[in-house]
Amino acid sequence: MKRRHKRMGLWVSLVLLLAIGVVGLRWGVDAIERAFHPREYSEYVEYYAGKYDLDPLLVYSFICTESDFEPTAQSSVDARGLMQITEETFDWLKSRIAPTETLEFASLYDPEVNVRFGTYYLKITLERYDGDISTAAAAYHSGWGTVDQLLESGENSENGVTLQRFPYEQMALYVKKINQNYETYRRLYS
Image (cartoon, rainbow, N blue to C red; front, side):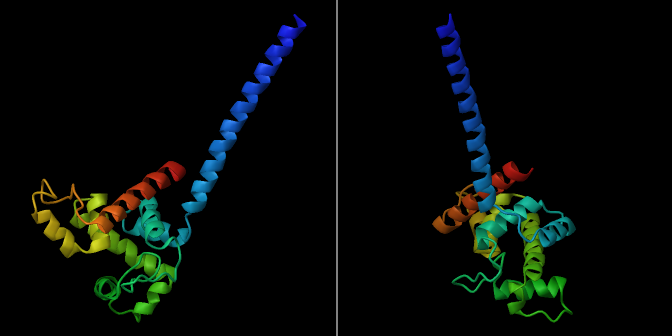
């Protein structure tokens, strides 16, 4: 009888240790995912996402994908800052939301300026493509002109408004990363 109680106690202890280990592992995985999916510059992201009626978690997903939250990031095509905006796009956006301000292309290294311009661009891109995140992400990455041409092709779009197929490898990878990051942000912070 003593032996049976001792064995039962060992099993209960083992199950308890296993349960604690599983909970600890889940907590550890979440902590690692949060480290790779931070919410830096939240004062700007939350403000401008609210101003432009965007989900802040989607904005974080774009920043994470574009620059990994590095405000001085610069791409091979000279896109700059957190949300990686090119000079041509900056000039066009400036004419729309800041025509009288003395901002220069270098101002995009300022996190507030970059998030302000990037969230506005994301908003109008989403509006242009019927709120479809994947199509908007493709356009954010490759430009409206490229996506508009793809939409004209029946093999990439069933309705001419959203893309179901992303024929360019870099574009497809980018869209996948945006969607994966957005899914992770929603799971971690919703």
